[in-house]
Image (tube, rainbow, N blue to C red; front, side, top):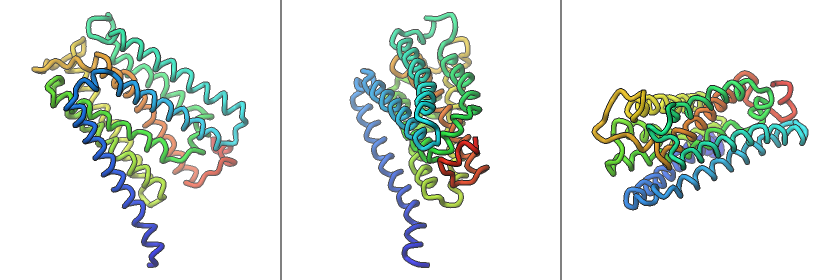
Length: 289
């Protein structure tokens, strides 16, 4: 075995561990800072920064993906606007409702948090998973993009900080926070593995997506059963009210359904790659859709 071949095999693994260590360190430092200065999270500044940054990344990633397709400039523009306009309006609606305490228990005859989680998934998933244009973008876009994007899930450490500060029950905060942090920590290593083209990379990415979806299933289930409202089955010693108040409510009301849809898109992309072969050129995209 030559040195070049050995480096090609070791490189992606080494980069994956390095990325994992850096992300873990940054997450630990951010959690420590929030624990030491609770006013940072309470101010809502991290929420605003994270939401805007992630929104811009999604918009940019979608545009770059469209540029890799064989679509005409007008088609690319129409697809981009057709996705980003509803997505931005949805963010504005949820954000405005959250700031005005619309999600607070008792402020609405209808429980809005579960509605905010499920309705976008029910409406968006069939469209995104069946759209021919979206399929063309997925075929042209590197599979690593949708995986690496969800590194933002490490921000779920806010639940662990809230538990440590005694403001959120551990019954909810521990599984929700740990699951989110693990998903975020593994996002970049899984993406680097996909970029390397190593055998088993696709299976690892699928497993990562499934884990991320299971994390939401557990967190949402426990969250609804412990938060005040019609679905509450458990009354913890510490009321689980943070998930209905701004800024924390932005996680279940917007970040969760967004991430679920990103997982669904990633799984669709990986399935299409397996069906059509891992090497897809933009010129071949229309024929595969």
